[in-house]
Every structure is written in C-alpha cells, then in structure tokens.
Image (tube, rainbow, N blue to C red; front, side, top):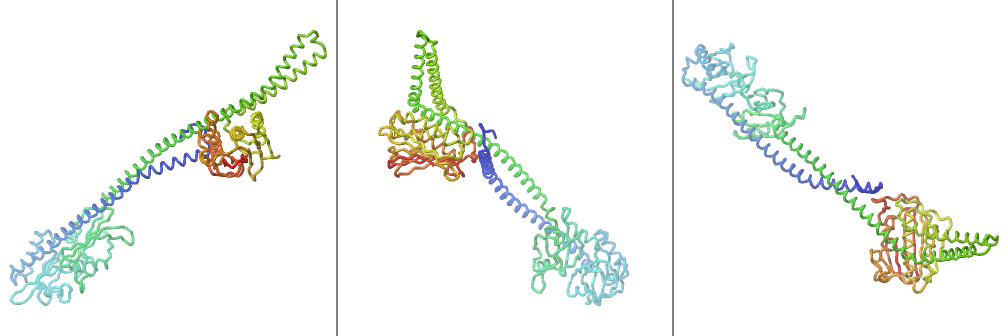
Length: 606
C-alpha cells in the first residue's frame, strides 16, 4: 500500500488493521445479502424440487400399481371366462387344458406356466404343464386353504412340490351343485420383470412384500428394508388389517444402517392390502439435478465472494492510502505550524539577541578604531604599540566568538527540526534556552534562575521540539511579568523512571473563563499584534506526539506540564517523519516540564 513519507512499525500495523477492518466490513455487508438470498432461494428451490420429485415418484408408483393390478385381474378374468364357457367334462380333460394353456401362452406371451382343475377335496383332476401334478392332493396347502370362501384368490409366492418360487391364481366354479377350482400358475420370472420395470434411475428398483415382510418378487440388487416399520405403516390397522387405503401412497426417507446410504421409499398397498408395492431410489440419484444446481449455486456464491473480496481489498487499500496521505499532509501542516510558531518565538527573541550582539560589536568597532589610530601614529612598530594592537585583536576575536555563539544558538533553534527521536540532556537544553532568553528577561525586569539537578539521566525526544516548548512557556511567563517584573525559575529533577522539567513564574496566570480554550489554535489573551495564539497549541501538539496529554485547572499558581518518553522509549514515526503517540498513554520514563506563578490561575500540559 503506497503511503507517502516514512512509516513506522506502529503506523504500518495501524494502517494494516484499518485495511483489514474495511475489507471485513465491505465484504460482510456485500456478502450478507448474497448469502441470505442464496440460502433462502436454495432452500425454497430444494423444497419445491424435492416435493416435485416425490410427487412424480408417487404418480409413477400408482401407475405401476395399476399395471400390476390390471395384469392380475387379466389373469383372473381369463380363468373366470374359461370356467364360464367350458363344461365339467372339458375341464376334467388334460388334452383340453393343454389346448387352453397353449392359447393362453400365445395371447399373454408365456405368462401362464401351467393350468389345473381341482375338486373340493384338493385333488388335481386334470393338469396341463411341464410338471407331473395330476392326482396330486393340495388339501393341506396354504394357497388351497386361502381359497375357501373366495371366488378369486391369488396366493403368496411359495416353492410347493416343484421346489421353485411361484404363485397361483384360482377361480371357484360350480358344476351340478359341487364346487371346483380352476388354478393357473403364473410364470414367476414374467411377473418379476413386470414389477421391476419401474423407474428410470440407475438405482431405481421395485419389489412386492407381504404382510409377513417376505419378498414376493426379488429386487434388482441388495435392498435392506426396515420391515417392522413397513409392516406398521401398511398393516398397522386393528387386528393386523391394512392401515392404509388402497389408493394411499406413503413416501419417506430411509438411511441404510450398514452403508449409510440415504434413499427415498414409496409404499402403496396391493391386492386389498395383502401385498405392498415398495419403490426405492437413492437420494443422490433421484435428486441429482438438485445437487448439481446446489453445486452450481455454491460455485457462483464462492466466485462472487472472491470477486467481492478482491474489489473490497482494492477499494480498502485505496481508501487507506488516501487516509495515509491525508495524515501525512496533516502532519506536514502541523510541522509548518510548529515552524511558524518557532519563527514567531525567534521574532520575540530578536530584540534581546540584537542587544546581545550590539555590545560585542561596539567593542569590536572601538578596538578596530584604536588599531587604526595606532597605525596612523608616528611609531606603530614600537613594542608597546605592537602589544596594544595584539591585545585589541584578541579582544576583537573574543567578541566575535561571543557573537558567533549567540547567532549559533539562535540558528540552531530556528533551523528545520530533525525528526529522529534521540537522547536529550535536559540540563544542556535548559541552559541553552535560558541563555537565549536572559537578555529579554533582564529588560522585562524578570530574574531568570536555573536549578539543574546533577547527574540527570537523558530523556528521549526531539531537541528542537523540547526547545520549542520551553521557549514558548518562558515567553508566556515573560509576557505575564512584563509590566510588574517577577521571577522565572527553570528546574530539572529526576522523577522515578522519568525526568521532570519545571518552569515556575510569578505572573498573573490565566482567567478561569478562558481556561478551557487555552490549547485552541490562534486563541490568545494578549493584545492585538503581540501574540499569535499558536504557542500553547503547538506545545499541546508536540506533547501529544511525545506521549503526553493536556489539561488545565484553577488553583494557586500557574503550571504547564509535559510528559514525554525517556531515552529507552522507541517512539513511533508517523507519516512525514514526526513522532506520533496516542494521547493519554504513559511510557516508563520521560521528560516533564512544569511552570508556575504566584497568582491564582493554572495552565497545565501533561
């Protein structure tokens, strides 16, 4: 992320955190409607599509049930018609039954396997088919017992004498007052093919079970059913009677306990509840379109999320870059304000500095004139004249050095501030500023005194900014005591892990009414043209950068405080190179400036 100026670690982390916050919020706000719409619409589509699929499966099962019932009724109708048109002698004739079997096979595609005629005692009177069953007695057979009282009966699948699975259709007929049974065996494979010809999915399969849970037709592949559940659903009526109507359909999901595969089951009664037609299809197969649509929607949402994340990241970086540029511009403006305040302070020092330089210049002029007088005399080379000129030259050099020191100190204060935090000797800094302000203090009738603690540890800060603060505070103090004079004391003291600088004066202080506004830029209580209103504002800004805070209260004495980091502090560097610290945080050590007066008003910077 391009940010103008130098960036310290703390600001880089802050900008990164801000970027992440912007990205998070923009992404969340943009994605939330998309995700909500995708979830809601996906759920609605899933419900509608699942309902449609289940309805289609139910209709499919009901139509297939009609086909099975039609097949069984057709077989029964053929036997009923034969019993109505044939005589007892014809039905008792094997040749006649063989001819009838051939006709039935030709008409129904080989569905009928054999046909027989039985008396009321269960004896096979006539038989036509591939097995030798004539004169066989079926009185004890289950299917024969089930025909009692029934005009038409369809048995369950059983093995019987032939040892092969099959079921029979029987029709009761009466000749000369005696009951007889016309029985036909339905080819099991043909019926099984009919039942299994249901559904188009790769996993679709159908079968028939009876009330005991026994398969009447085998499924295409392994089919594990919850038989007790099915029996309760289909045959859960009183006394084991069917609990479902003939035209009812039950649809539910089933999960295989062994494979964990979920499947859809559709169940409906057959033959008046004697059987049940069961249709099964894996959910993954039945709802394949739904799953593909869900995957497509998820892909679209993910791609949309990625696009939103990319766009939000680009926008957030651009926005944070603009914020960083604005921070850099603001800090540059603050530096300009500080420089303007510094120039204003230099202007206030100009009169004192001019007087400070005027005396040595006058001495230098006088000594130069004296040398000219000696040179224009009669014996300039006389030893005493040479010694006098040498003395005058030494005096000129000394006064020039004095002027140089004064201008050097003034220039060192006025030049552009170095933005690198370093260790500062507070005693040397106080001595330098006190020397610059000494001349003005004397003209204002103010006694300037320094009280410096020996062996003071260095503090961390910017020398030019600390000079700026001290000079602003001292100028305010001198302005307050300009008319009546007073005393101005600058002291340094160790304060635990920190260093305390105190500036105490006996000026008139700040009125309580304007105390809350003393740190506002361009606010001043001085006469028009005398103050810029930037002094305390600049001090407050610098103090914040040096990890301090600002406040004021009303009490005896006037005080101004600065808390900044000690030499072990690793202050952050903001855009533009100035020190940046959050207001209110205290570092383990630092510098504290305190100024007070004997009047009942107080100003504090802490």
